[in-house]
Image (cartoon, rainbow, N blue to C red):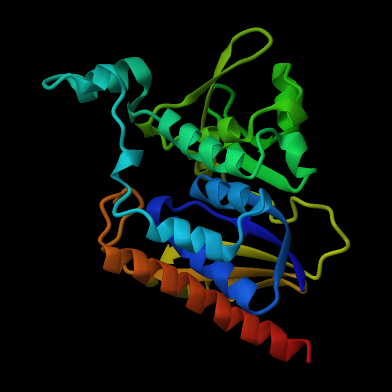
Length: 273
């Protein structure tokens, strides 16, 4: 079954999306196009660039921890006033450029660099803090004088992952001035039907959420006939910026994603019998 996939934010909780991707692969679901916000932008870009579920699972298993995502800015390295100084001068405590380098390295393994390389199969959501507007990348880049198809995917992912105050914003030089681009999760009312594709069977939107919130979103599981929201329940004790996860916690997140997706797959299969 061919689907479009929409991966929400959630920081390190996004590990659960790899588990969901594995479930899709195991049961014959092929992702035709993908859209991502924040950590979802990382997952979406890797899937569209050609990474299989097994490859992402192996990549996940290769890391003992993810503390390398918390790289201080140069001014932030000052022992005594680093944090407030970094917030004041860089608008964030940690350097979002580490995400750019991480994604760029992985994309290059698949010979992918710019949006043109993925044939309009990838969309990334970010937010322009300067103008307070949602950005759909790559197409909205023309508003800043850039050729959308020639723009680096890793730059767009960095934009979408720039959690306000935690990560430094991406500074995008526009036609007349510079714009601070930040995490797409600050945007509300994001359209799920971001792709116009009549050749897929379904659109699935994956969202890591705390178990206490499940009842509030339960009725959103079936958004419409062809769009489903896959809520992945996570224990409240795990936070999006907890990059020092134990191996057990990583496995837990992966399994939660797999189980939530499997549950919906069974529901969809029964409905279409």
